[in-house]
Length: 210
Image 1 (cartoon, rainbow, N blue to C red):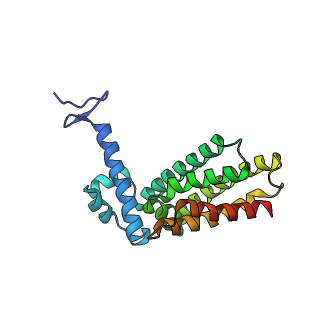
Image 2 (tube, rainbow, N blue to C red):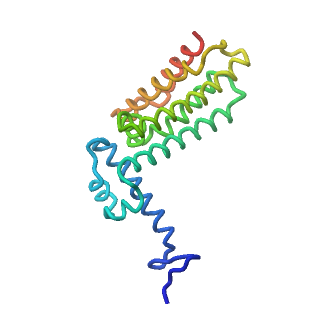
């Protein structure tokens, strides 16, 4: 009698669902490595499979191709970094605006910049990766703009910064922050995180107070 059942299929003593999750995680980790190392445009399913130690058949059981893998990686990195920033904004909401900015920047850099592969994929390789990826990138950028504009509007209500059109200003800030974080993440040696935060704080305060 087969060990597989609809209620809980087993393979080599392990639930099939667990093996599938582990396999998908290996492909995601290898995609992160290969896209960052070779560039998305120069990457291949074969290279990803080789890095993961898995077959192309197994890859296509999980993803439709490199694009779907890139989109999932990008969504994962972006979601984790936005959750980190949202938590930092909420946890320090009662502090002065300059301190809130510092905490938010630190949370973002810790999430996306500590691993150079994440910074490379989320800030560089997704740009120009195709119409579907570009649409998704712009949708995420708008979501970031709304999140940060809302935080700026709260500071304006408390009289810490002047009222203004923060949606447009935040889009400009996002571009500056991402450029600096990408450069910092790949630098050797890296400037200290505190130095990077001080630079970005000046840029952000200048943008929201002028």
